[in-house]
Length: 169
Image (cartoon, rainbow, N blue to C red):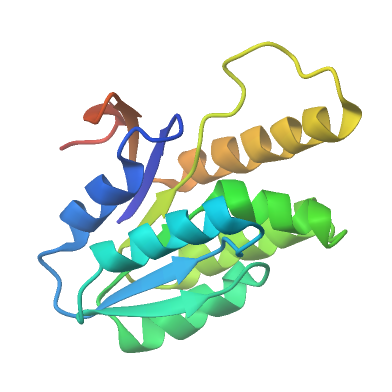
């Protein structure tokens, strides 16, 4: 079972993902964000505090295929937080996003465990004026679409409320 949870910033995506995973005894949490400033450090710490001792954290900013494979070997479910920062990292480290996305999707299909993937909706506003930001939106939207195609469920979070876009609750 692959679940994609999307929505705007601060809509409760991570909290809802953890709620969906709480019935499992051994949980993997793959974190893609890196501490880039004090605000990001606080956000990462907040997410750490949301997890209990039944979670094993894998911090992996780039190689999601490897992290999924490793996490699937030792856990009952995987929460991946998030594709949005992962795409940011691929751009920052100048990695080929299409190749990395293909590897990620292949690992996702083959991991054999339930996976809950968190991402942001980044393309619901105006077209960004700056070229790099437009590229980021394009790559994130593409990764979101491809992941949603593979997902059994797609959930849109709005004001803390889950809207099931694809699949059953």
